[in-house]
Structures are given as structure tokens and as C-alpha cells.
Image 1 (tube, chains in turn brown, cyan):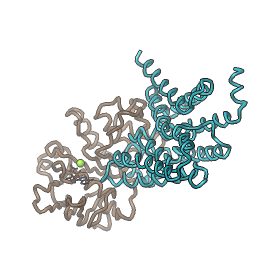
Image 2 (cartoon, rainbow over the protein chains, first blue to last red):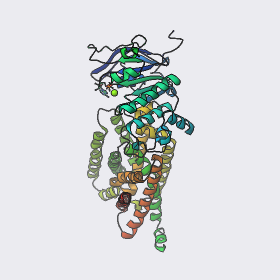
Image 3 (spheres, rainbow over the protein chains, first blue to last red):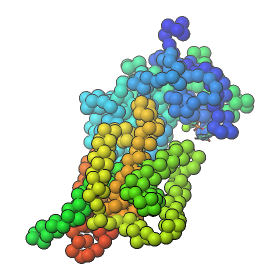
Image 4 (cartoon, each protein chain N blue to C red):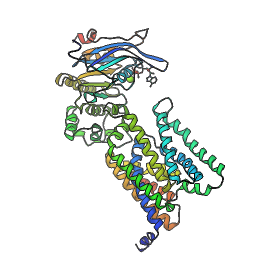
Length: 231
Length: 268
Ligand SMILES: Nc1ncnc2c1ncn2[C@@H]1O[C@H](COP(=O)(O)OP(=O)(O)O)[C@@H](O)[C@H]1O
Ligand SMILES: [Mg+2]
């Protein structure tokens, strides 16, 4: 089966350490196309690191990551992948950059920019300065930038940090719309298990503290969130 | 008006204006991304390294502009390697290399003991001493820098604002960072003859932050910053000629005055 429909993400025996600190040990994971997965874990448990390994920004000590069936150390089809990093919004308040300019960092047509801004309900802010928007609105602009190339997989690192509860609700509505209507595979990282487990379809827990031997392993086809089941 | 035409009777003044205008275009182009990256200090660091280049040039009897370019480009490469390695902060790398460049220049001078006065002109600029050969090099480099800037604008922009996301757009971030560092190095080399090593940083940054105060949009701010640099350059050169003041210092003070003026006007 695996060879017929490749998984959006497949992680095999992945281990990674920064200098002396072993962060991930023997992680195994398969994420199907069309799934909506949340990765949770305490600060410092290695969530961002795992995402960077998936995206090929970091190289593993051991193991492999396959994106849509292709080894990510060989090549990555970036047009299929949208990423919103944890640092996306940092350090831009001193520069008068417009919303339009942020989305256009991707090489796309004006039409596609409008379309992406519309899908996050931010079109009317197109010519506003990014720094004049609220945290939640800025986050939606970065998602528009990730969506503008029409990715099949969208990866978000702590997208709701610093966003109020009400805005978070609209934000999660947007994500589930993307997942159900456009069949975009979503991978969402958060340190807030409680909130996220009500939103996503599957939860992966990544926590060295719960695995004393640094063993983190999952197979999302089999592990389901206790919260998600209740819905 | 008559007096202005008198200014251009002198060939050295004509060359000074040309060199000044080229620098006024490229310095804010590069400076804009330095402001985004909060790396304004890079220009000052490389300009001190440029002094080492000048000393080597004078010592070997080669056009110092050429040895300066070599020194700054090599150093820029080293800075980027150290910076991207993340174990040392960019700030400390610069804080080490800046005095290093100056110290090296001083040692070379004292070894050769003789060309001190010549070096002074590079410290504070000697736009009126721009030779025809200098002008050609400045002209060629200026066009090269501007063309690369335009061709790779999106890549520089994305990488400066958000390195990780830029990577997921398929941009070869490491290569783009090195290319950008080379552009800074070349800009510093070109600008040194005009405003002097100690004042280059000012010319790359002040017009940019002036423009950013009055404009909505990053691209617009770049265009306006070039305009601001142009005005500072022309007014600075004219004032320095008639008031018999050092050109580089007058240009920098003019741009600071423009910045102050706009800050005050914005507030009322
Ligand atoms: N660039 C780095 N160099 C060294 N250690 C790092 C680096 N980035 C993260 N770490 C360490 O790796 C661990 C996991 O970090 P991270 O993946 O950012 O966690 P999370 O995103 O789950 O909060 C932490 O202990 C952190 O201190
Ligand atoms: Mg993190």
C-alpha cells in the first residue's frame, strides 16, 4: 500500500542531537495525505527541531524523512509545502513593509496574492503595513504567504502564541476549512495540548520527560487523541 | 547659478559628482537590507577592514581600491561563515573584526612608516582626489551591484526578513547570504573613496531610516532613500566646496540634518 499512495510525511528511525544534547531518538511516524495532525510537547521537547528536520533545514544524525514519497535529503518539491515558522513575525516592526509585500516574497502573480489573502479574510488589509496589524492578523498574513503557492502540505510552528482566545477560534476554523475543503494536509505544532486536542484529528505527543530513555516514537495511523475521539 | 557652473569647470569636481551620485544610489540599496537584518554595524566593520586593504595597496604600490576590494570580500565571506554557524553572535563577530581591521592597518603603516598622510585621506574620504581610473572602477562596480540587487531583489528580501521560510520557498539561502555579503563589501570599497572609511556606515544607513519614516512600503522606502542620499550627496558636495569643508563629513552631516528635519516635521 505504501508504494501506491505515498504518505505526506514518513519519518523513519530519525535521531538528532545538537552538539551534546540528544533531542530526538528513533522517531517513526507516518502522516497520511489529508490528515490534520497536531504535535504537542513541552517547551524544549524538540517540536521545532522535528519540523526543521522534516523540512530539511537540519540534517539528522540517523534516519530518513520522506515527503510525498521522496527522500528529503535528495530533493524537496517546495511548491508542495507551505511553512510558517515560529520566528516568522519577529523583528519586522522597524521596517515599513506592507501586507502585499510580505505575501509577494513568494514568486507568484498578483491574482494569486489576492486569492490567498481572501482565503484568510485579509484582502482588505492588502496595502496596510504589517506592523499596524494585531498578532493574530499578522499570523494570518504569514499563512497567506504559505498558502499562496497552493501547497498540499502546510506546516505551522506555534501559530497561536500571543493570540487571544477569540481570534484563535477563527484561526482554527480557517485551518479546518483548509483541511476539509482544499484537502491540505496540516501539521500543527503547539505546547498547548488542551486547546489543540479539540481541534486537530490526530495528536502526536513529543516529550522527552514522558519518555525517560529519549525514545520518541509514533505512528499516527494507530495512535489517536483521547480528546478527538470524544468529538 | 553662475557659481554652480564654475564648480564644474574643474575636472576633479565633475569626477567627484559622478562618483558621489553612483555611491548615493548603491549605498542605500544595500543599506535597506542591513536595516532589516539589524546589521548596520557590518558596514562599519568592513570599512575598517578596508583600511587594511588600503595599507596593503599603498605598501605594494597597487591601486588601493583593488586591494581594498579583495580584503573586504574575503572578510565578508569569513563574517558570514562565522555568523551562520550560530555559535558566535553576529554582533561579537563584528566587534572582533572591526578593531582587527583597524589594528592591522596601523601595524602595516608603522612597518612601512611613511604613507600616513595618504591613509588619512581614506579615513575621512577624498572625493576630490577620485582619479579617472577610480571613476571607471566605481562606475563598473556600481552598475554591477545595482544589477545584481535588482535581479535578486526577491531572494534578498525573503532571506533578510525570514531565513527559514525563504528556504522553504526553494531559495538557496546560504548562497544568497554570501552574495549579499559580497555586495556589502564591494559597496564599502566603492564608497570609501567618496565619504571615507569612518563615514560609510552613515551613508548606507541614514538615508534609509530617513525614508522609512515617511513612506508606507518597503520598496517605496528604497526608492525614497536613494533620493535622500542623492540630495545629501549633492548638497554636501556643494556646501563643502564653497565652505571649504571636508566633503565626506559635510555629506554625512547633511544627511543627518535631513533626518532631523523630517523627524521634526513628522511630529508637528
Ligand atoms: N540551535 C540550537 N542549538 C543547540 N540547542 C538547541 C538549538 N535549538 C534548540 N535547541 C535545544 O533543543 C531542544 C529542543 O528545542 P526545540 O526543538 O526548539 O523545542 P520546542 O520547539 O519543542 O520548544 C531544547 O532543549 C533546545 O534548548
Ligand atoms: Mg518551538
